[in-house]
Length: 275
Image 1 (cartoon, rainbow, N blue to C red):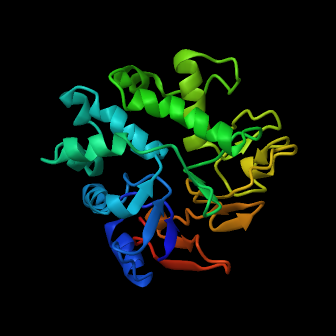
Image 2 (cartoon, rainbow, N blue to C red):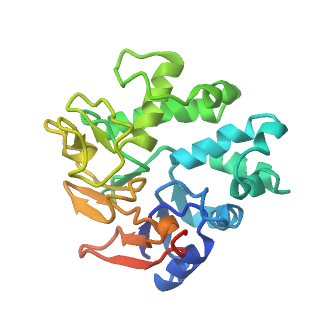
């Protein structure tokens, strides 16, 4: 048995299939952890989503910002759905759309396996959140997404404010939690996200830190796999294993083996670089 974490797919079906072949993935024996952002921009989001859905008995997926955006768009009027890019429209108007989106909506924001010693999020964690804190915060959002009141959350989850505070309530609280799990790259020592900063470390404004390097951050006792930050590239340090290596931008698609004492990284070329 092998357990592999895989970086952002973003609708890149060919690289996904090649990577599964390279790691000799056997769904009867192995497990996959997908870091989120299954869809958007790669041109084959429908096929990629169908592939991951077909592997659901052997895989776990955490929600990324593009996945949540797809779920939000799916709640809008048909006329509005037809305004999004063709890649997402193919999902929204597919005959099996409800099956795929109903499944996607049930995926977590955080996955943890204490026996294995790993956890996974799409983007990052607040500096003061322990692993238990993260799981509890994620559960708050997941209950709403999987319930009858999801439309209100999906309509109102967009926005950069407010910054996270334990005293937040209602939609503001859920939005702040979602932003941390799915959009975080840089933040201040107090955990305020700098949404406009998207470059590699060293390009950020003074006083900002990569979320995993903030002074005073808590120890979590688990190694963490994440994606989201393609300009960071493959990064391993501070207990963090960042594996979004820009497959959709002409980079690579990365798999990281989680059940091995030795570092084992497998990569395949992503889709051709866009013009």
